[in-house]
Image (cartoon, rainbow, N blue to C red; front, side, top):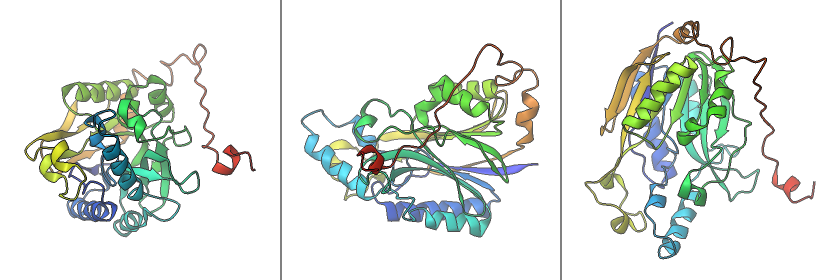
Length: 315
């Protein structure tokens, strides 16, 4: 069963959720017009990855950092309140599977903490899975809370079994194994990383896991930052590339079949056969015959993060 996939690395309208959602819907329409049945967006695409955290000076830029965080919080997605409804409705309208990274605000948890989340939307518009990044990296910890393992799972879709890990979660061997052990066909890694080292890692994962690997960052230049962005001229230069994107598709057991889409604000297309993933695991199935389950065992606490009432001890 051949499946055409689209990997979108176009820039968001940073810190503007409504405008970025509009761009996502435009990209989805474009991908569908090209025959795509799976559309993938980068890490934290809604409303953009907080790239400023790598540029703020500790102490000196605290006030600016607070201003940016407030704006990000006010433009984050509340899934329970229907924040993904436009994208879900578009997925159902076109009958396509969508994987999208987002800054998530959870009104049922605290309404303040932001999570780095990736969501799988089914071809019927339903939310099949929500995974929150387990371990924000370095200054990211000033932006995002720590996720739980309730979304560390692989889900059935019309285009194959899909699982996701975000950025440097892909360097967590046990997190990878948790996905491998669920008969995964398509392993999706929305990220902010790019370059040769990252592509080498994606190739390794395709070989190790015996699965298709799809990854992309956001292709972003200083000129893409809105004029209304607080501290824009101090933090960014118009001709500077903050990220080259480097969308890539790797076949099971290794080998790039599409990409990298380098410094291009566009969509990468590839045609894949999900069944090839299972066939590639004949010589090396790390969660099956090659995994020695008689010796090794992985235990995962998949309980969801408790609601705020439980944390406060009032329930």
